[in-house]
Every structure is written in structure tokens, then in C-alpha cells.
Length: 185
Image (cartoon, rainbow, N blue to C red; front, side, top):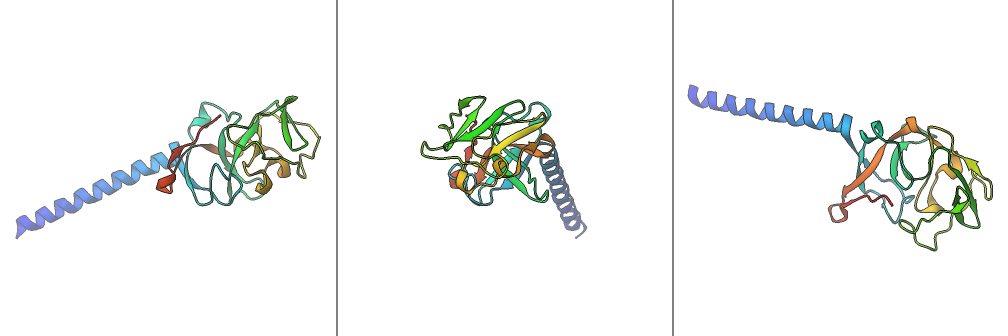
């Protein structure tokens, strides 16, 4: 009888140790390396759809700042309890304006053909009005959703400060049939 109790005790201790080790590994990964986020809404359609889950690399911000074309997750400028996912259109020092449905960056029409269809039109908002040029300040980014007609983005509420950026999205993992690496043009 004592032999059986000892076996059960050893088995339970092994399970608890394994669970604690797994929880510790998950916590380290979640806090320091990668964080999951859910896409909510249609602002990034067709490249990201509502209710997709993405992994975001949070450690990479320690080594390099967001680049043009990258998809980032950041704290909403209007409500820090919410996280947004958008594409970086302009980085510090860039000058951006919108004219006749097109985005112009540093005086040249921005080629967005790698992530947008050619018939997508971009129009100004309450911050970046049609034909008005703005320069992106240091430590800030100008972001837009890929679904321009249905995106609340920098055109409406200005720039995203670097301190609000959580990380760079790099992998869609749910639903399983939609798994893919997030490509940066």
C-alpha cells in the first residue's frame, strides 16, 4: 500500500513541476518576447480579418524601430485600454499628404501595390486633410489601416508615439486554415 501511495505522490509532484515549468516558460515568452492579439473589426481587411489572432514580436522594438510597411500593434490614442493594429505609412522625418485618393510620401506617390489593390482610394480625415502636408515628428509614426474607407487611423487622430507601440506583428496563427507569416513589403 505504501508503495502505491509513494508512486501516486511522485506522479503528482512530477505533474505539478511540469505545469509550473510550462507556466514559467509561457510567462517569460508572453512578457518579454511575443504577445498574442486579436484583430477586431475590418480596418485591416483584406490582409487581416476580424477575429484573426496574430503574434506580435515585442522584443524587436529594443533593437530596431518600426519601418515603413510594417504592421504594428499599439495602444489606441483615444483609449489606452484598447490595442490597435495598423500599417506604418510614414516614419519620423517623412512628409505625407493625400491628394485625389492617393498617398504621397516625401513628394512621391506611395506605391502600396504589395498590400493594397490598385482601386483602393485614400481620403483625408480630421487631422490629415486632403492636400495638407504634415511632417512626422521624432519618435512618432503615421499609420493607416489597409481598409482605408473603414479605418480610424492617423488621418483622424494624428501620430502614434513610439512609447505607445507594443510590437511588430509577424505571424497569424488562428484560424488554423489562415496561418501565415506577416510579410513586410
